[in-house]
Image (tube, rainbow, N blue to C red; front, side, top):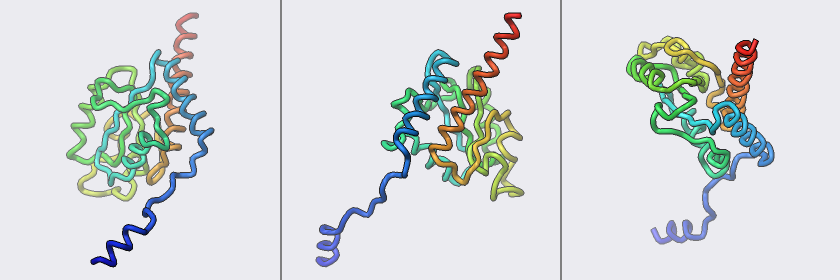
Length: 183
């Protein structure tokens, strides 16, 4: 016991280094997302994450957006505990029968304008859970989906890129509506 204690006192910490995220690229992505969200909504984006029956791999990557490496709060992006305060629903996993009604209610409780993002291979097409007796289907079989972010699990930087693509698409649609209305 004494040997083990002495070894652990003098051993280096068993941690891994941060991911190889280029700080300049991350700052550029986050700043662009915050600016586009403010231009579209007049404020920053608020995100609600919904686990519809996943293995939690995608949740780990989504939660990494809040860690000290990515820290999306510095760009004004934040996560909400209630769908009533959210602009974007990030839905992970295949929708299980037990979560189908809860997901539909969450979608209904989210105020307009709202966007839904299916995250991960399971959210986009059931992944390895395809054909399971417990699965109702992919996210787009239950609620309308605006963007699919594939990966098992997708990296946090890919999630940020996907959110930028979503805001760009929404901005283009908004500008098209305004130009059609002004004619």
